[in-house]
Image 1 (cartoon, rainbow, N blue to C red):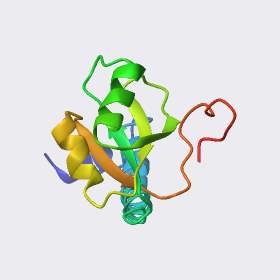
Image 2: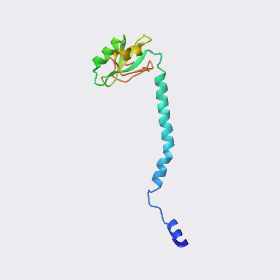
Image 3: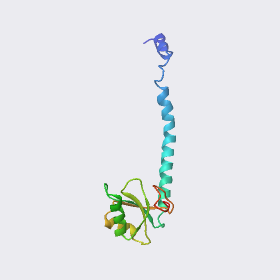
Image 4: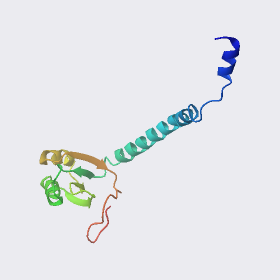
Length: 130
């Protein structure tokens, strides 16, 4: 290719949207990743702040009814504090130091210590969720 042909190729107008859109989107990627990392960190810090509250988010086996989930909590000598939107998720409380281990022995799938103020569902009859 000679010099005139090279100049013609270099001076040709760019196709609309070929490079501009991908460059503009990739400019926001680092900011989006930092935002996501910050939100995950805040959520983890909030959950970790509940280690001494005596309240736990209890995840019963999939398909368990609310009554079955409550029975698992009662089997571990705990009480119902609040209910989640799904029937197998509840908030339970106990003064036992080994309550989380007792829940796992009773058959729940997951136990996460929560802060004393948590609201994730409908209020209990005659009370609040927290």
